[in-house]
Length: 187
Image (tube, rainbow, N blue to C red):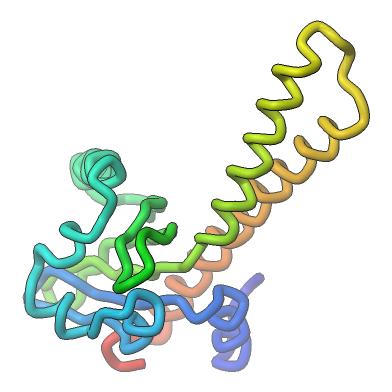
């Protein structure tokens, strides 16, 4: 989806399901107000304590995300980076988030601009499909593939295609914002 005007920009945001926007680094700390709806925590809790966000990530995911970001920084942040992780939300336990991050330089200052999306239901659906595939594989070991397995594989492929399309849409959002001088903190 190419974003060419404010109307298509707003449509893209609706498709993404009210993403949380944030900017960090270069003296900028900003998290959009809807972070509260997603996590139960206020923007100030994130903005005033740089350890708040990583402190609420699942420990295993934190290690993987941190490694991915270190590698991204080593590659001079040339391409956007996408990570998926569990985040401990207020009074509900962990939910899955997908985070899209780009490096931005404006007025000689370098910072990161990000967009987070709730993918909890998508991950639950995906895990159910993998569990069903595993049970099928265990039960039908050595038996030719039958009815249900092709459908499971097709559904898993559909999830991957949804992710690919979402990543393209997020890139379009970032591109439109950059071309039009939008800063998340000014939305």
